[in-house]
Image: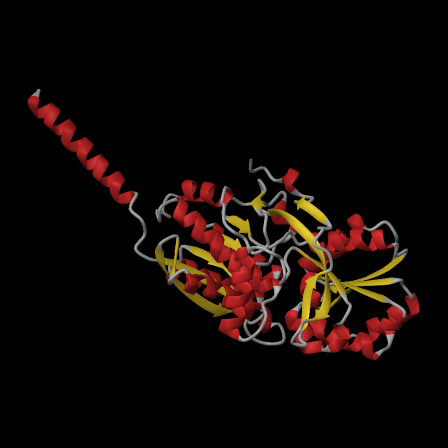
Length: 395
């Protein structure tokens, strides 16, 4: 009997010891950051990378109190390359989290490599509509905004402004399709045409001739990165800005675009969930530290990259560094509380954000720089989610 009791006590002690060992915080966390870092759209990935790294640096090289190693790779604006990088980082490098991708088509190619291995992907930008609905995934979280949201807000603002006809332009990929669907969801006027261009296209002479002939009151264009820089220059050079109001999503008139286009950006309106002058302590610190570190003002991409790191910091801290417990970590991510640069933020049940959206305007600051600031502190929409959450089976 004594031997039996001794064996039971020993087994219990070993069990407690094993559980205690499993509950220990990680000694180091590896994060794989895959993004577009070269070519005409490389500036977008650089914003995400630089802001994410800035947050880690300001945190003393750790997230949630655990030292962090960030592995960075360039997807070269190529879905196949992105997929290979995801596979390498997950299977060879054994990263604990993935993040970084700008474009939806690249993320959709690489994402299965992460989530199938139960590696959390926290998206600092790409947020395609299928993943908000029927294809939602317990290992996928969005730190930016649903693909439709900026465009929904642009459609709503165009309706409020009384624009009776609209011409819509976007690249032919998932985010482009989501963008124009979002605009139409909230726009009550007439869409005179809806055109999808080649992704990465830089010459818009044919499209501009079609726009001139259509004579819309407002032109809504979703053309990120180098595509947007070239389009706006060509739009103004063709003189179309004299008769047609150009309306853009937030990144379409942001600091990277304004730097590339110049003063013709003045007065252009766009819709976004963040601005340089959102008045909270986290944002004031972020803008100041980013400009200090990189000698430029941040964009929405940078704000999202920074918040992605803050989300990870808060969630890892909540589980006391024990990232091996996936269920506990998922719960911590879903319920994460942190001081976002955008202000109010929470995850919906599909792991997409619920947040405010604003109208912004390109102006000049006291230093004569083009800056994209709030046109009004009153949001276009408050605590806005997405149109697909009811299709998601996660609850």
